[in-house]
Amino acid sequence: MERFGKIRINLAKLLEESGLSKNMLSHRAEMQRTQLNHYCSNTITRLDIEVLARLCTVLNCEIGDLLEFIPPEEEDEFQERLETQICQG
Image 1 (cartoon, helix red, strand yellow):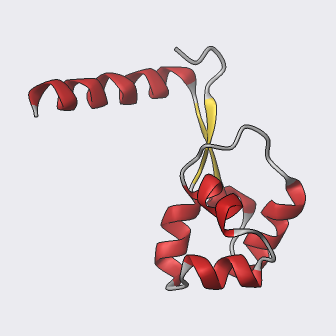
Image 2: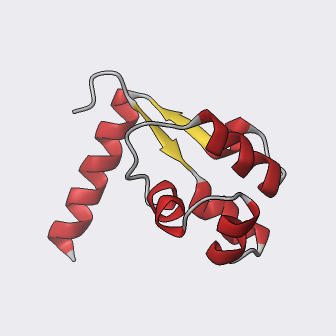
């Protein structure tokens, strides 16, 4: 259980909506492809505000489009639904 909730990075969704490839986004945002992959998969532990600014600029979005706060109770509900689906399927 996440005591304080967590931050979800919606980069994969925004990238899909933009029509850009990961290679093109990494080039335009001047970041390594592996770093971009970590942002897309929500596996980073420290946000870099310079990277966030570059992503928002290239994707023409607001920081609230890119980052989403998930309260602890909603995260718990999501995990329970996920575990139920795995067990059933």
